[in-house]
Image (cartoon, rainbow, N blue to C red; front, side, top):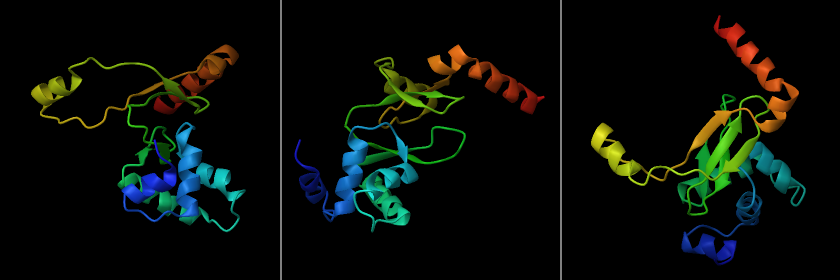
Length: 153
């Protein structure tokens, strides 16, 4: 793989310092919000604003270099580097941590979706919601489940 500057040129995008820094941050991280990306790059360039980071993340999504998702009930958009291979995540409902997981779909999932539902699948991304080991060990999962039950009662 070439440098981020080369990748941007191939996509006919300006090679800006902000875009390169954003790609470097997201290349090896779990999905992050624009605010979290901003915190990671702001120390390297104090002139960058949150709106600049957000606009650049959106431009990188539009050009296929980043993926955008809303994984949690908090409604925040998160960005991740588009590695070219499907990325699947487990999301803790209690502490909101996101974990990469290696799970697979049945090999003919796209055909089944098309035949059964008339749905043409794009790149598969699986998000599994539940409770992480730490929250289960400390009982935070039970407290969160009780809070949900109370809210739905």
